[in-house]
Length: 130
Ligand code: HEC
Image (cartoon, rainbow, N blue to C red; front, side):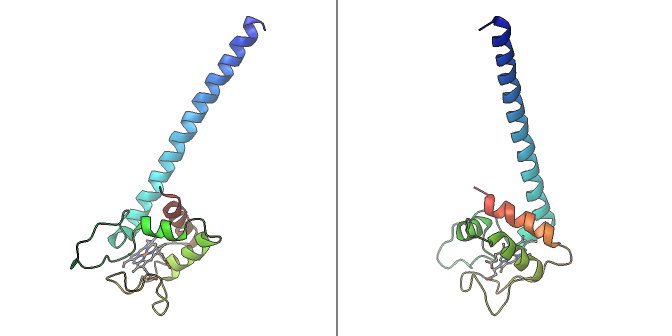
């Protein structure tokens, strides 16, 4: 192999590494952006990111943590669309999915503040969180 060819390969690999690095930086930035929008939309008034440890006698949480929601629905077909619909329209108080585990009985509608597309982005972020 000529020296020229080796140099080209090294250059290509370096370029690939740089692109890989920057695509990850960009992905991280947009993830943080969605989390910021979730905060701005008021979701975290009720929802925490992580499940807080609870002593006996402590009041139950206001809402399931994003970690609990991800554990419950991650990988279920159609979960993103179904949950986004619930986020927009509110949870059905007669069909509570987190019954007896919360302080609040239900989640009210987040529409019209939160659009369907925006709700989908939030749910995608929630389900993809580690
Ligand atoms: C006033 C408190 C409150 C706010 C604000 C709130 N939620 Fe909820 N959320 C709840 C409660 C309570 C539940 C559980 C409902 C149930 O038992 O079915 C819930 C459930 C959910 C679920 C799971 C639904 C299911 O059927 O399991 C998702 C996803 C969710 N919320 C996302 C959001 C997002 C995104 C926002 C912001 C746009 C938001 N929530 C704002 C209280 C809230």
